Image (tube, rainbow, N blue to C red):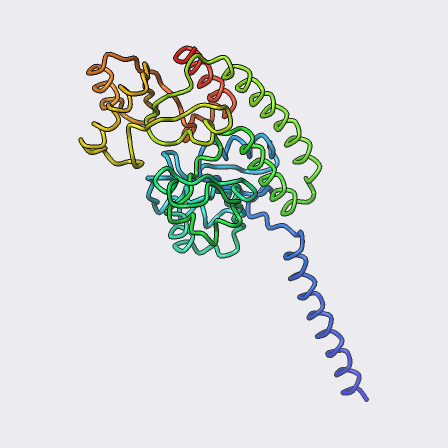
Length: 322
């Protein structure tokens, strides 16, 4: 009798352990949260500055937030320090649309296979990159482009430069934080709502000012402003740097100078992240002005914000194009 009683108790305990294990598994799968930091907050890594700024406006002090790439992710490699950041993170927030080409290798090098990866381009209508523009469909949603190969550079990844796309990115970040940290869902949603209002105000301000521009044509340093141009009726007629991080060939620069002559552009734009040497040389040769237009790929977290940089860009455009 004692053996039978012991066997029943053992069976019951074993069943209870199995049930607890199942509940734990599904609890983590459906809305549960992993919080790896000592203070119990989510540890969130964002790939570059705009996503960092979006996330801190939503999460406030309810998450530990860091930046992965302090230079443009288009040309960045990764270091052991970056791998360690991924190892210690609960969530990675990326731009998507092929903007972070080394990210897959970085994730593969990490031991953290449970990290939640949030693609903020989901739901954004992606435009073809300039080199692909003549070869097919003008735009696809981010989800459709997964099948069409946007990771291979077919689509323009600079989605954040259109504030309306930035709103979609903010919504994606909000939803991911709320799902994986449901205790703070209301906090995230309230903050996101307030921040989206500021993005709509920015959009309205840019739209109002750009309608009065004397000229709509401009030449950027690299082809980052297609979404911005499409949204506000401008035309990026050329870019000084044909491919990110690669010095343009003499033949390509000659074509750019021909474009400047044919369009009557009187100003070209450099970027704060790169040497203006080539831009200055072209401007000197053609006797045209140079201004700085920031693609918001980098920023100082202690001083800058997405909205402030975009407003500075607007003031620069007003001076150059009115």
